[in-house]
Amino acid sequence: DVKVTQSSRYLVKRTGEKVFLECVQDMDHENMFWYRQDPGLGLRLIYFSYDVKMKEKGDIPEGYSVSREKKERFSLILESASTNQTSMYLCASSLGGDLTDTQYFGPGTRLTVL
Amino acid sequence: DAKTTQPPSMDCAEGRAANLPCNHSTISGNEYVYWYRQIHSQGPQYIIHGLKNNETNEMASLIITEDRKSSTLILPHATLRDTAVYYCIVRVGSAGGTSYGKLTFGQGTILTVHP
Image 1 (cartoon, helix red, strand yellow):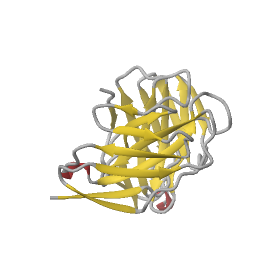
Image 2 (cartoon, one colour; image 1 turned 30 degrees about the vertical axis):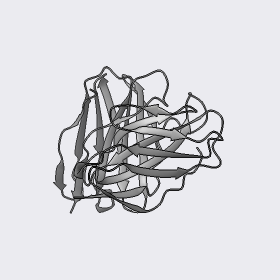
Image 3 (spheres, chains in turn orange, yellow; image 1 turned 90 degrees about the vertical axis):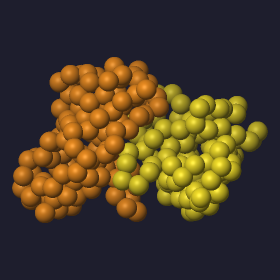
Image 4 (cartoon, rainbow over the protein chains, first blue to last red; image 1 turned 135 degrees about the vertical axis):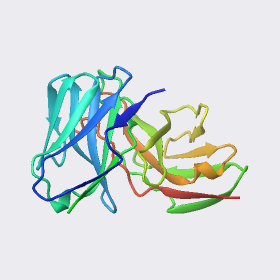
């Protein structure tokens, strides 16, 4: 079974803090994705990566950065957290080569920025 | 990617089959039908996908009409743990285009399984 894990299920941070969200997959997948999910807005793609050290912006990259130093790990960084970044953050991975391969999700991190 | 239409909610008795419909009348020839579900406050879970033929796995069956304009996800023996939001998604099955592989979830169908 594909296993995608995220470092925290729930996180509370203060405005202006730097926030790190970690995602690890154990299936040697090439592609990894970060989404945020908000009521009424559905799933929105923040960043994705198709190889180590490679990253591409998604639809809403502003205020975020990512890091992929190892194949199994994809980190999302909020440089200076703001209240409008309060959301459910979802990491996903897919096999590789083709970005449209089936994506498998982690359990999500519910981030609250006060 | 083509848009999909699903009923906002459905009920099902435990142990009975749950049949979740999805309309995708503008689907293109290279677009697959995917189903995911999301239990409250958890990440989406992949269920099944297909192109033309009916598909079955350990979780569900997917029936796609011959004209591919609609499909039905079947959970053969629903349990209380199947209560979730079910998303039907249509997306291209090969690299290319401008969607860079992102998934787009609509509103989905809230399936409630009753004892």
